[in-house]
Image (cartoon, rainbow, N blue to C red; front, side):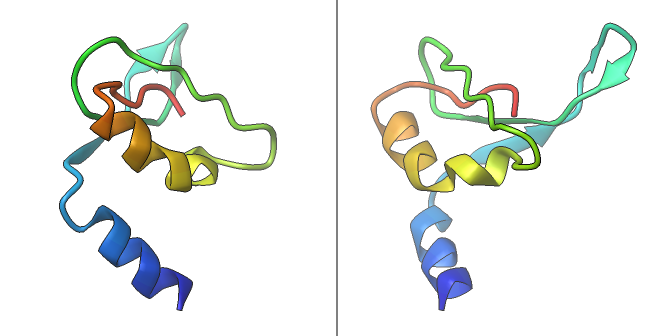
Length: 68
């Protein structure tokens, strides 16, 4: 059920998964939306997916998702 909800929630959200190197470490970033960036930092052991329910609202408000 949750997977089906997520597919509907993100069906039209253009998000890119990128993997830049920072201080020699490869990190995962999800970028969506336009405008000033918002940095969402999940706590360990979570990942960017922790923010899946707010990502849509932030992107719609003009804030791109960044590192996470």
